[in-house]
Amino acid sequence: MLNVFRKYATSWLIKVALFLIAIVFIFFTGYSYHSRQDTQMARIGDHYISIKDYDAAYDRLVELYRTQLGSNFSEEMIRQFNLKKQALNMLVERYIVVKAAQDLGLAATSEEIQKKILDIPAFVADGQFDRNRYVMLLRQHHLTPEAFEQQVLEEVTFGKVEAFIKRRAVVTEDDILAEFKYNQSLIQLAYIILEGKSFESQVAMDDAVLQAYYQEHQDRYKDPEKRQFSYVLLRTDEHLNDVVITEDEIRRYYDEHQADFHKEAEVKARHILFSVKEDAPEQEVAKARTEAEKVLQEAKKGSDFAELAKKYSKDPGSAKNGGDLGFFTQDRMTPAFSQAAFAMKPGDISDLVRTPFGFHIIKVEESHPEKTESLDEARSRIEQTMKKEKAREILFKEARDLADTAYAQKDIEKAAQARKLSVLSPDSWLAQKDSLPGVEGAPPTIMKKLFELSEKGTSEALDVPQGFVVAQLRAIQAPQVLPFDKVKDRLEKEYKTDQGRILAQQKAVEALDAARKTGNLEEAAKAKNLEVKKSDWFSRKDPDKELKIQGEAQNKVFQLEEAKPLPEAPLEMGNRYLVCQLLGKKTPTDTLDSERPTIVKRLYPQKESMIWQSWLDEQHKKTKVEVFREP
Image 1 (cartoon, one colour):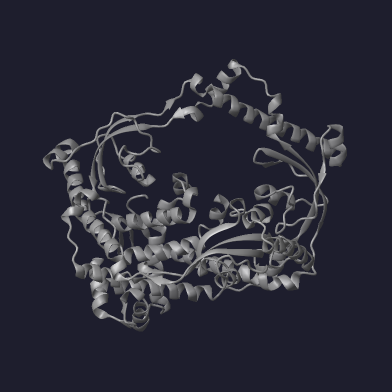
Image 2: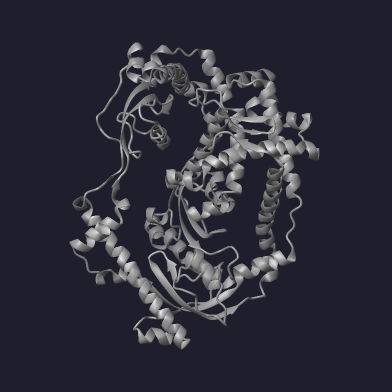
């Protein structure tokens, strides 16, 4: 997962982020929990980027990564991807591009701005642009038409400049040939795999050894920094009875949020996947089809579909659940799959359906038709939603005032007492991974902000699921090394793992040295009672399924040559070490013409990104940027 994002963090993901950050500035309706001072983050010529704008961009970028990565997202990724710096760079980049557009004569025209606005569905009523609706919606988002149109101008201008620069991209024949050789060149290896785990039984240890290991690695066995807080939790639900929603407001909300009440047609289905690549040789396709047809006959004869999926399906995401895909709309699946599933009735089993992933057998279990919820059906839900929104607005003002007073007085107790609010002051010491008692479900960013406070410092009004929190830091407990007895079991396990890996590495070095002396890995391995395996011919595109080599190790084996068939050192693959010898290397040429369109299609976006990034770098060099506060 991390490798994927390292590769694409500056391409498609960032483009999506740029667009979404632009929308933040157009429709920023969140609460302002940022600096109390009207300070600036950076200056580009005579243009300033405010801390408020920067914070909004940063928060949105973090949320974008969290949405994309789901449970894989962590605070460590914020540091690893340097999202704070990315957010500032994006804002600087946006300004630079819009400024350069003037020199290129590519600034958006009034007609282009008008078309962009007219195409926004939120401003359309009864099939036509509604000026009153337009002004009203902007007013709700604290925007004037002039300010909004300026943002649209920048968005359209940015897109025009990017399209103009990218048109220079060209994929040459040399590019195609190099890409073909890189992905299609075949190698064959003799190899030995030495796993650290298999050497752990040879590791001897006693308390003296563990004590020495403990002393050497104490940083691994520390309790993290902990803190105590006093805080006020202002609850939204306590203000719901103070809010009255009129029938006109409910109707207007319904009209403005039509998409929320429209539900696309959906089906619930199971499937059995027989994997075969779209461009696989016909022999492989025929083999997969034959296997799929046999299972199809079993399914149509009444065999338990879920059990068949568990036994035969190659879809790692659904096979263990009997092929269950849950409910999905038509746009969620590949066209061929959706077309088949949505043409079926509950209980039907499809014939074989071919998609880029292989052959599918589909069984539809339930279907829900397309539906738009009526105002009467949605009224209660709308009223509750609007009550919560209004209550939060009331509550935010109260929380902000409390935060300002506590900040000025440096005492949350006094500020809360003046407002007859209760202060929570638990004695428990909290780590950053913990939650404030009574404030469960808050995003990790809340505790991160609290752990950025200096002692006795007070927070801003922090948005949590229950409402808002204003907190003051009472005390800090520095990280503490855990006692030996408390971590002894963990020490034993980690010492064994470390030493097993060291023994595996030593054995791998010995095997490689012996292979260099004899010039033959198999001969050297026999002398050391090690098993040598021989890989199939494989390429970067189609790796050896048993060897499972990837990353830096893969790059190194493909750099081996017949004149130098052994690597400089054993190749580390997690807790395994690979010793290998190149047996052969060849590049097929008979598939170059058939692969050419695919290669061009793959390379062209890369070329576009490269030329766009090169142009951006040149613009950055010409532009003076002063950063007043490092992100």
